[in-house]
Image 1 (cartoon, one colour):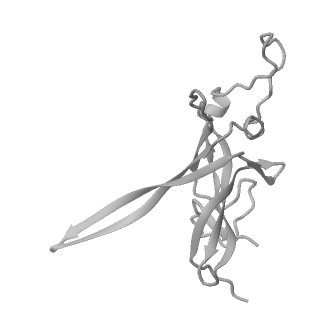
Image 2 (tube, rainbow, N blue to C red):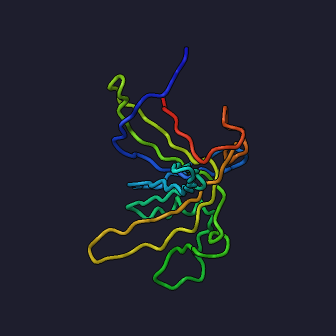
Image 3 (spheres, rainbow, N blue to C red):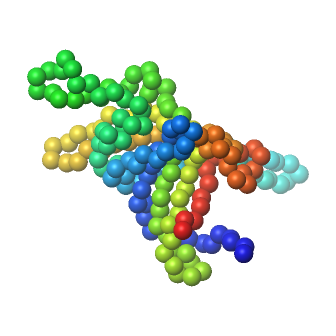
Length: 189
């Protein structure tokens, strides 16, 4: 049976996860209340001119992913960045503390990311789920949130994808081109 891709109309993102290598197994940690992921493409334009003609080529050189969440998922951050919660020698009015911006997370962590979306499959009208994955890259330190009076505060994360032929645990990506990929898309069951 030959399976092929269709045309999809994405109707929303329902999950965003960071993919880490835990004992050679790709492990997902969901970012709670994630409400948007932006895949930003760095495309180089090469222009050709001569003999009264012009032509252009566009080369994908880098993919960055930014995710925004409406919660500060401290437990998820503690897991992703392997932080140790500090409970000793804190001020009397504090129970637990996490530190961010140290050299360990400022230089980034090696991981992958996955955005899960719902979509309409146009050939059949069926509702399906898609997963868009950047299998390898670097997740920067979480940005400090903005706070306002009587308003929510959330989390912003930035990820720089690397071209890859393996997932974050080192397993080969099946059928990947020999020069690797920045990201892939798959329809889920």
